[in-house]
Amino acid sequence: MVKTSSCCMDFLKKARQSKVIAVVIVSTTLLIDYMLLLAIVPVVPPFLWKIHLKEHPEISQNHVDQVHDISTATSYTPAFSNSTFMVEATAQPPMKELESAYLATQSVKIAAVIAAKPAVQIIANIFVGPLIDRIGYHIPLFVGLVVICFTAITFGLGQTYAVLLISVAIQGIGSSCAMSSGMTMLASVYIDPQKRGQVIGICLSAIGIGLVAGPPYGSVMNAFVGKPATFLLLAGITILTGICQVCYSSLKIEKIHANNEAPSMWILLKDPYILLAASSISLVNIVFGVLNSGLPAWLIKTFKSPKWLIGLAYLPLCIAYAVTTNVMSFIPAKTYRWAFALGGVVSSSLGCLCLPFATSFAGTIGPVLLVGIGNGFLEANIFPILADLVDSRHKSTYGSVYAIADIAICFGFAIGPLLLGGLIQVLNFPWILRIVFILLLLYAPLLALLKNAIKHPQSERQPLIDELD
Image (cartoon, rainbow, N blue to C red; front, side, top):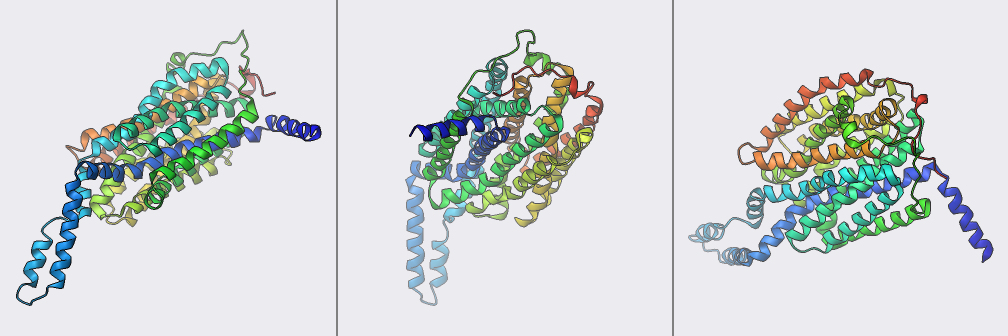
């Protein structure tokens, strides 16, 4: 028994010294967070329709009566009156058309659900970033996992729109802790800029996998096993990840050198290069936000797509993002990261331009691929650039700068649905995409300014946070 306990302690000690374990924990955390976020998207429209049917039971009763009338008319077939019976029986719109018409009026509610999480996340990051610089990333990362688990359980068991909205908003707090702490962990553990860029790319590809799996997982699981099982399974995976994180870090508070204070978030925001990099993240994520809130209803209305197929519309985008970020992690392109980021913005803008010209569900694949590739190129290069900017122009702490990056992501996710919800009453979905295309294309050339942003060699930096034990 003593020998077994000693072996377990030795195993835990070796695991805590492994940098690979840090990558696994961060990747899994971000995977669950984004998978939960995107699994909600295809679940919201049928969930709202289900609530509407509960509030208006006469709709379901009328549909049952209509089906009964049609079967009666079909069994009674005199030649002179058959057509008359069928016309009267089909006078009521079918249930699918009623659902499509109702969801077309619920764009504001759908947009509010999708925008709630990033809106709360923006506020949370204002406090989480400086907190990470003070106490380290271990405790905030664990808090993020706890909140994400609570969100999944609440959303799975919730039966009203208010519960849905509140649970998604609370997820913003967990996502803030998870994203900022995770990226800070990677930037602190991996000091070499090239290696750091690789592991950040790997973790961003985990986000891509979450984006890939989230929508089809949500739509298919919700259709076949129901909403509770869909989200309780994610909660279980989150609990396992939290246990692994506790075994790895023991929730310790890191020591910060007294003679080297971390730069405040306000000081970093006054740096024009950091502001430029962060705003580019916001712009490409506006596209994600617009597509998340507007694409499902547009597909249902334009192509009469079945509900289980809606989540698959995001599959090309998410696969492209996952592949692009993973490929970028193995390309030694430190000197040309700004060029890849610029190309990413252009690619996303072209996707927005081409999507309205799709004439079928299959026709949306190409434009959506462009958006995914563009977002992957940008984020896989901007995140390492942010760490390099802090190293060369400020003090080497990363909590605040990655909180700024997370705020930028959330701002894009929040503005996208709000932009859609505000303009959809005046402009249709294709015209909103064209407006976003113009904004991205005008902004893209500014990223060339990042070419000479890194002033000092990386070897001159002095880490603020102590290395892992």
